[in-house]
Image (cartoon, rainbow, N blue to C red):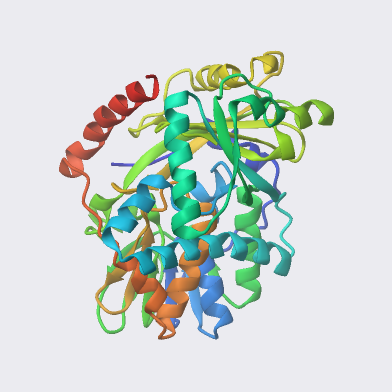
Length: 437
């Protein structure tokens, strides 16, 4: 299945409009050697390359298009503690209690690492702390409250519960019943953050090649990673292409066919309104926090640094862009904030994120010297940073934390290569109906 973002959608990205990209790095055009070759120029790949270079390894990073072209440059920008309740349940079932708590601590460290990197590398990416998770009904509020109490008891992680009577003090919307505030999570401009990490990686000595799609990966004691115009001989490979990884390769053969069945591309789309006054933006959401609801097919939104509302939703569980996307997204926004009906929506964009069946991250090895990082399932802004740190640790000989997450088992999506997307579409229609109850 070819995953491509509509060209008009890519050009209409609020994030792309707000950055001045550096000149493109040249494509790989020769045969070179390195300690490590990283495939993929999103958060996970750039973080891996940065961590490895700072440990003294020679690193080559290959990106098929531009740095941050995929989900890392298009997402909702929410940097969240945890893995999401579904993933946490899966982890708690599979791992001993102590190890499940260590996995949670890794997610918490991911948000701390993100904030440290912003400070260390002076990345101007509009970071704002604070996150609201809101329930749209009393039934969903009970489930949210159960999760909040579980997280406090099991992980020692406290959040502030918000009763129905207090909701008006937190958000200027009547859509929500109650919720919870997490002061440690937050939000940022995702493309600015990704480009800032890439600049830090280049400064640390990483050789970055854009426009360098991998057409073959020769495995063995000393792998070779080949593009159309060059190749890298190395000791280790890090696969960080996520849902786009199965598009690498030639003659219809992907470079890691065993990984694709365990992740599914989900189309997620966003709009950004025209600018409003600072006073108007401030009263929409207390603390200017990031927000998402607790629906299975959720809405998520946040104010931007220049006083727009950015509003996103998981709209498509197939490879097709929904029809009348801008108006559909605008109507979803107005269901939350009808008072914004006078604002135009000059930006609409989207792309694909990766999910696993159990929503837990999927890390592991192919043989002894090829590592993969995928399945971030909507929690990649923060968790990808830790993924890069953990893969650097395991290459350096400290495998304990990487192996902790690699022990999480994953099932393939049903239906095989041809039928797993239609099967997921039917499944998500079921969950959408449940959200309406």
